[in-house]
Image (cartoon, rainbow, N blue to C red; front, side, top):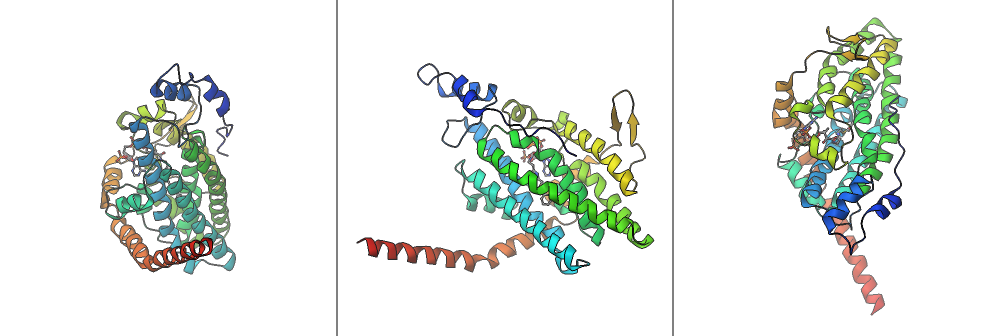
Length: 335
Ligand code: BYC
């Protein structure tokens, strides 16, 4: 359904194409590797700005995954059947796992997990705007799968070809899991749409509330996107915010038809000349207000996260004490 190719370039060939170390400085080798579509690995030299951009994007991404556990996690105890509960638990656990792969990928750039979490907990670091919206009814869980995970896959498949190796490799597994998430959401909604008029109304209500925040999730328009130009030159981002948004709209319109819901945009029409759908204006003031901490659930999300972290302190203390004990025992045996 979201079919940008997953083909990966031949890294050995790209590295071989880079000038040998005696011929060129590290910057020239880095640029040659990027130009040849190769992978930069943690031990390779890289410009500080490239490192900083990656830490920013990967840590924001990791924060989004773990904060993203909350809106759906709120429904685990209220899932309508054992089957739906089991699926939802697995999905929310997957999001936690994605956060862990991503923190690990960011750590290879020399920033510790503690530093990254401190940024999140003190409100200095960003996470995706979308997770600051509430999940008001059960259909919201299906709509998050269909639209939020659908948007995430659209954005993340190109990241499987990101120039930084550890991030690209983490994204391959994440995208496979996101694909399951998207399908389970769509299937849950199809089931509700075959139910009672009240169930259909819940789905339509959820679609009406999530549609515009999901479109904003791809980030500001290209003309206002601070980082896109440089990130695309470095092969971190492969497709611009607006192009991904357009691909998402084009992929989602037929899915909405099959589902039997309307999308809440009177300006949504097929443009024969462009061979794409036109769509209405996104409320960027609302987006920036949410990104800057004033969305409907920002304070609640952050407070829940900080509390979970503090409540888990004893687990980290116990794990450290256990590791120290094992190390002492190993040293005693070796002596
Ligand atoms: N929300 O120059 P731009 C998931 C910020 S998790 C908040 O275009 P860039 C899932 C941006 O950070 C989904 N902030 O930036 C989990 C920048 O601010 P800073 C998360 C946003 O980096 C659980 C400023 O706006 N996905 O799928 O080139 C359950 C200017 O933007 C947002 C990722 O993180 C936003 N929506 O492009 C279900 C994917 N958009 O840093 C699902 C990886 C923009 O200068 N990230 N900003 O302070 C990316 O692909 C890119 O970072 C973005 C932004 C497309 C998000």
